[in-house]
Image (cartoon, rainbow, N blue to C red; front, side):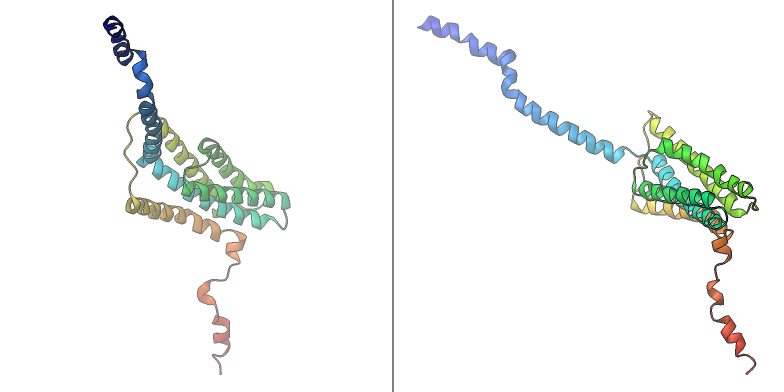
Length: 221
């Protein structure tokens, strides 16, 4: 009996030290491995976008919004006499605006394809003037400048994302609000003159002139 006990004693010891020891450890190890990817995913999501990536995404989305507005304005001016060109430009503008809204919320959808479309959209809007026999205005120039800016910004963002070097973390809420304000100002400098040069902008009544004819008509009484 003592011999059997002595013979069985190394068995559990071998099981604790051998492969059987991993059986009770696996649930704990499995729990750790299950939590580890979740933590890694959370950490990746939080640090996926660096400061340069956040800046390029925000500014490119704002530029896309400006480009879309100008393209819609230019397209609206061609709807009466050049319907296919007007419809194409208006559709391009609406798609660009939709992409800009999605990119502003983040992440930017299909940034590589969007960069190619932006770089092609600028010359397309610019060439719509000679194609329809109309004069090139500041609207086409603004569309070209905004499209080039969007394409370049997206290219910089893609390059920053592919860089294996550690990225500086994106700024917080106050910092992002500041970069958005600066980007919106820069985009407005090109978008507002571009919209004013479209037919819709040219025929818009200035807000300060409302009621002036009525007031001047009573001036002689």
